[in-house]
Image 1 (cartoon, rainbow, N blue to C red):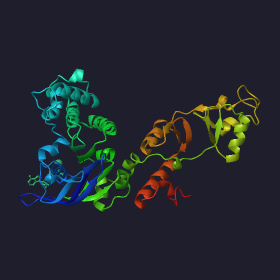
Image 2 (cartoon, rainbow, N blue to C red):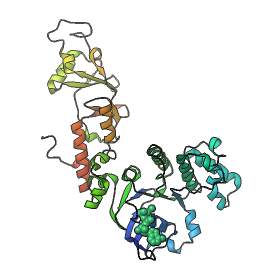
Image 3 (cartoon, helix red, strand yellow):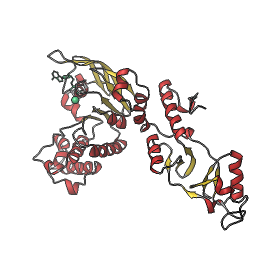
Image 4 (cartoon, rainbow, N blue to C red):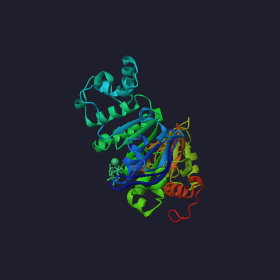
Length: 396
Ligand code: ADP
Ligand code: MG
C-alpha cells in the first residue's frame, strides 16, 4: 500500500535526515516508526503526503508514484494527525471534525452527520461535545477530535506523528486502547510515529526501529523485543525487553500443563485414585458441563483413608464437598504478561486457561518462562513456537 524505494532526504544545510530508506506497509497494517529525536521519523512521514519532497528515490501509494500525483488530491486520501492537533479555535468540535468533508464539497447535513458519527467512534458523545470549542476540552479529548477529523473523509491511509505525545501517561494509555479498538474496526493503513518503545510495541503490527536516518530493524514487536537485530536496537528497546515482550506474547495451547482433572460429582475415592496415579498434589475440578470450578488438594481427597467418616468426606463424599473455587483464569491468546499479573493478583501458583468456557490446561510460572523462551527462539528462527525444542528449562 505504501512503498518506500531507496528514499533519501538531504536538507539544504546538508543534513541527511533519511538515508536510502526502503520498506513497505501492507494494506490495513499499522506500522510504528520508533527512534530517538532527530532520527528522521517526521521527515519520513511528511514525504508520504508531500509536505516534504525526497532528494532521491520514490514513494508509491497503491502502486502509484506519489511524485506524479497532485498533492491536494493525494492528501485527500491521507488522514494526518499531529501532536499539536491544530484544531481551529473559533470553530466548534463538530465543525472542526467536518473540515475535510466540507473541503471535499459534501453537503452540510451530510458532513455534520459524518462528523457526529466519527466523534461517537472516538468516544466523544456529539450531543455533549459537538458544540464545544477546542479550549473547552481536555488534552486527551482534543487528541480524540484530531483523530476523528483525520478519519472524517474515510481516507485509506492515516499518518500519525506522535499524536498522543503531549498527554499524561494515564490518558495516553486510554487513547492507545481506544485507538486499537478503532483500528480493528476501520482497518486503515497507518504509519504511526513515536519515540516511545512501549507505545510502538503496543500499537504496531510491525515496528521500524530508526537509527540515524536508517531503519535498523523492521519486524514484529515480539521479534524486535526477543531478537534485536543489532546492539543499537537491543539498547534502544531496553534491558527490560523480556518484560515488554511478555505483553506481546500470547498464551498458546502448547504452553499449558495438564494436571489431573476430576469432576464435582466424582466420589472422593475415585479422585484420590486419579491423583495417586499421577503422583499429583492437586487436581483441577470441572463441573458436569466441563466448565472450570476450581481445584482439590490430594490431602482433601485422601482424608477418607484412615479417618473416621465425617459428613461430606469419607467414603460417601464427592469432590463437590472438598473442592475449592478458582478465580484465576484467562482466555487462551491472552498475553503472558496478563497471566503473570493474574498469578500475582490471586497469589496463585498457576492459572487456568480456557477456550470460551472449555478448560484447556494450566499455566505455571515454569511454563510461562518456557513459553517466553520458545517464542523468542521461534521468532529468531522463523518457525512455529510449538516446533521449538527447549534443551534446558528449570534443569529438565
Ligand atoms: P524526528 O521526527 O525523528 O525527530 P526529523 O525528521 O524531524 O526527526 O529530523 C531529522 C533530522 O533532520 C534532524 O537532524 C533534524 O534536525 C533535521 N531537519 C529536520 N527538518 C529540517 C529542515 N527543514 N532543515 C534542516 N534540517 C532539518
Ligand atoms: Mg518528529
